[in-house]
Structure formats: structure tokens, C-alpha cells
Length: 417
Image (cartoon, rainbow, N blue to C red; front, side, top):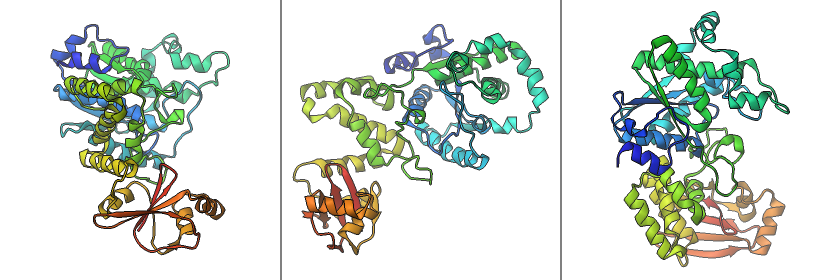
């Protein structure tokens, strides 16, 4: 399958300046850039959709230049609804380091070039910027942008000069990367198309060269109807460990998110978030249609998406853990407990049942913990090398003095070890 065909099949096409997608197959300059601002210390699955598009280009021989916006991150990409809160510079620096590693891991190529627009903006004088970039645009052009209109129109929240200028800064990024590396193709999400096309104007005006933007649609949560992203309050993060910000999703919860997708969405999401080819997807869907109760398509989606972000070994581990936790008559071993401890909160042995439940977060107070215990809502699964014993915890003062998996209800877990 050619690049243009795969982009169409996976749904990686929204607004673009490329008149004929087949020209991407034999483009003279096979390189592109894609950018993300360090507004948090982790990317989300909203960002991941665009990264998966980038990975598609890489598989077809394109060289990736991935930009982390150390400069634009200090301002904040304008939203439709209101002004972003400025991040402290130390936080921006911390976020940059975190998401650079996520980008490298997801793209999965040694040929990636990481760039940071702070490197070329830190010495750019304000008057020079106005004389070069500012003079290249009329206010009419900028006011026509959708996000500007939504902020300036009746009932809009208004917009600061800093955020108004964001599109010019991103446009200059494209110009700079064209001048330094010859990059004439920018990839982006559909919400960034206007900002990205600013660079096309600058490249044409100052370098007398054509450039293109290729965007991919924003992925919509099939359950809520909202886009996947942190600003929507429904973020699924790519980070699996907490760096102190709370912006993380454990590998187990990441896997469960995909596993719980409805049948109507699984094909759409599989094309975007996995690297299964067309034949593999069709085969998975065929088997799923024959026995939908087995949820084979959801399992394939969950394994494929988790493998992309966290690696195949981690995906295999949580797939097996899921089967053990939710399967009938499954034997839970000490090895399984180690995998569980990577995904659930862990408390030390020797605590009373009520203290272990509170410290692990399975209850918010001792009173609530005692209520759970009294009602039999807490189970204790105590594994050995090749076996396990499951029992109900009912006594608050019971000492948990051996490795144990605590389970509250159907899907709340914690580890004692």
C-alpha cells in the first residue's frame, strides 16, 4: 500500500494544500516537521493520533523533524474558549524534557531530528520580528482565522496580544526549518491548519518557494462526542508514571480504555492508533463479527495501541493481568502481583485491613473503609508461586502480613507487599 493509500485508509486527511495526495508517494523532498507545545509533562492520545500519522509517513521513507515548542509553550496555543494560563518557565523546561522522550519512543525511529523553537527565538529581537514577520501579514488575514473570530465575536472571551501573535511565531518556525533543513511539508492536527498555513505565506514571500500543510482530523471520543485532549477534561495520558503533576495514565488503565470501546468505534480507532495493516484489521474484524462476545477486536485494539506507546512487553503484561483479574477461575501468581504493582497503588505489609485500604486509595477514610469491609466489598487475593487464594476481608483489624492483591468491587485494585 502506498503512502497516499494508507493515509486515506486510516483516515489521516483533513484540510491540506496538497492538491493530489498521490504526489506524496514520490515527493522530491521526503521530510516533514510536526510540533507540540510543552503545555503539560505528557502528551495525550489526542496528540498520539497526529504522531501516528507522522509514523505513517516515516514508514514510507520520510525523515521526521519533531519540534517541541519551548518558545510557543511560553505563550500557549490559543483555544476557542479562552486565554491559557501562562506556565512558569521552569515548568515549561520540565515538560519539554518529558515529552521529547515520548515523541522519540512513539515514532520509533533512530532517524528522528528533535528541534526546539526556543533555540532560534531566544535571540530574536522584537523589532526585527515585527519588521520581518509582522509586516508580511495584514490584520484582515489574521482576523479571518476561526479561533480569532470565536474569541472576538459576540459573547467571546477576548484574546491577548500574546496569543494573537502565536500564529506568526508558528509560521516563522516553518520558515526557519525550511531555510535550515529544506523542509517544505508540515504535518498537524486539523485545529492547527490555520497556524501552519501561516508558514506557507512566509516561505512563498521570503524564499519564493511553495510549501504544503497536511492535517489529520481531530479524533472524537465516540462515547462523549468530545475531542480527545487535556483541555476537554477527558485526557488519557501517554505517561505511565506520575512526575508530580498527576498527568499520567497507568499502562493498565491505558489498556482498559481501549478494551472498553464499543463495537461501533473499534475499527475507526484501530486504523488510527495501531500499526496493523489493512489485511490484519480486516481479519480481526471478521473474527470479531463471528464471535462478538469474545471482544477480539477490542483486545486487538488495546494490545496494538498499548504496544505503540509502552512497548510490546508491557502490552503483553497488562493483557495477561487483565485476563487474570477478570477471567473466571484464573490463578493469580506472585509474578502477576509484580505486574500489578507496576499499575496499582502499593502499600506495605503489616498494616491492618482498614489502614491498607485507606493508604492504597481504595477508600477515602477509615469510616468508608469499615463500611466496605462490613459489606464484603473488599476481596483479598493472596498468591503463591503457582496458585492463589481469594477471600473476603470483613474485619477492620485483620493484619495483612503477606503479599496480597486487594480488590474493591469489580475494577478497583491495590497491592500489599
